[in-house]
Length: 213
Length: 228
Ligand SMILES: Nc1ncnc2c1ncn2[C@@H]1O[C@H](COP(=O)(O)OP(=O)(O)OP(=O)(O)O)[C@@H](O)[C@H]1O
Ligand SMILES: [Mg+2]
Image 1: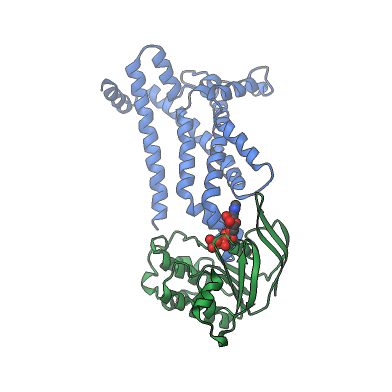
Image 2: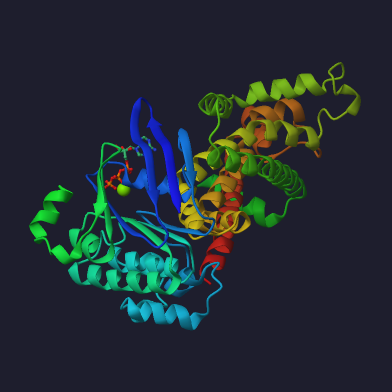
């Protein structure tokens, strides 16, 4: 279980994140939504322990993976990037690349990929490692509808295999709908809404889009 | 044109004094650059990656120090090593060693300043990504070094360029002694003062050629490695 208590982040005289209490349960899949600048990245960074909050406490498991909003492409090929510091074998990397539709790019320099191609490759680089808590910052921001669907499938499969908790931010209602079972809406650094996504009710897409706006 | 011809004649005649002056110049620049980088690169990296109180004040001090006029640095070092100064007993005044010390005073802040601003701008996303992948610190440091080697090389070359071109500090503490502490820049000064402009210019051209060769060699070495 992950728990945040009285977490605040202040830049200058602006409080960009103010969370009195927020808990996540093991195995949950949570989507973070909210406008640009609402604090999604800040919240994920704090949970990933790459940013210190100005006050409050965060309880989180040790084994965390975190994909930044703009993941860095290291020197070298795509497959070298994926295997960097990973215990996995080359075959596993190739299998992942195949699932992401990137087989043809595995030996290309990572820095030469298009925005969308690199976003999928960076996700492969994360998903080749096991973890307890997976934090993804807008993992499909650069992807088309098909790519988003593909990623949603890959995420669900990873979650089933590892039993990890998944928290991701997104502006895409369809990703939230298909990959998450809980939605948290941030506004000005505060949680404005927090609830289960009920897939059985089958709300019309437009209603989801209203929630996101 | 006359000077160009003279420069090449000088270089290829392998004039004994010129070679000796070149030797002192290279020795001095090599040691000042190495020592400033050994001190400045890690400190710059530390300042660039850490957040602490007084950081912006420290940066202002470093930037001011970066603009320190070479003659002032020369005078400071001179007063430390002069016969009655605190280090007078070491008898280092008018040696290559004290020239290296004076140059380190000048160049180390340059290395610290350039490294810290490079690390700050480039290493942040690398560190965030690498930590997100669960990598450990030694590997993250290696990644930052390898990703930033072009920028780090330019820091080193900047330091070398400043050191080889510097005249104010080395003439004060070195004294421009023939066969001992005379370097290219102080020789150029001397010839200019003697009115031998074209010879001075020829020396200047030799200096330029040397600087170009060092730059080309260094970037070639780094390029080689990065194309693996
Ligand atoms: N280093 C920083 N210095 C100052 N302000 C910052 C810094 N980082 C973030 N902020 C501010 O904090 C607020 C929240 O930023 P954050 O990146 O968390 O937003 P976000 O919800 O991820 O937005 P987006 O959808 O655009 O990615 C923004 O207004 C941003 O300008
Ligand atoms: Mg963001």
